[in-house]
Amino acid sequence: RASTAAVLVDSSAMSGFKEHIQGVRADVARRRNERPGEHPLEFRLRPVPTARRLWANAMGGRLGIGSDGNRVALVTEPMTGLKLPGEYCVDGGKCAPLTGMGVRIKRIAGIGVKVYACGLYVNPASARAAVGDRYVGKSVKDVAKDQALFDAVNAAADVEKTVRLVFARDIDSAKIRDALSERLRPALGADSPSLRRFEAYFDGVTFKKGQSLTFTASGGKLITSFGSKEAGQIADGKLCTALFDAYLGKSPVVPSAKESLGEQLAGHVTG
Image (cartoon, rainbow, N blue to C red; front, top):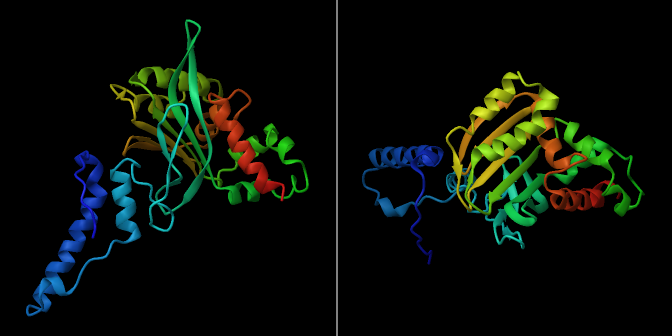
């Protein structure tokens, strides 16, 4: 017997799921008109992957919905206790596993303050295709630390990459915007239209503890989401590369996330 849970959801985030349900209801009404003698309970509606993914998006990722439309485990980041989905899917059904995880720690007056948990999602098979056989037979330990591996993955537009931040405290989005802009400006230029559009996403936003901020680079397009709501998409390959350089580059914002990603990818590209 299925259990029932009461959940509060932002109505603006539910549009895709509502559209799907409205379509189902229309089908039910049509069938009733076509077969008026049939009892409505003689047929039933089964959950399908599309509906589950739409519901997961509306729930802001609190339900782990995998590539097969079923639930996937939520992974707890141990230092913060915050949860990240074990797999992240974007439009078109493209999914990647959680391959790197860590915590952003900022030093304030000599004290380490946890800002957010960070999850990195890269499909290892796509990474292997991007680097070819150059690492086959080499030491996993050495390859995991090779910056050339991260640069190759970041530069490959066909390797979909996602970074998901889950905040460990309330924080003004201007602080996140300014920190990211500082990393993006040298690569894009201060007058970059893409940079100005990206910065505008953060105007008037406050991130609450437990809320997520997600960036996905897919085919030279950067997709930004605040919680369950997509803020926008910017088609700019340089923006994608510059943003992910903040997490995969020589001076990563979250070193532990990059380190664990390197270990995961090295295991796939050396064999």
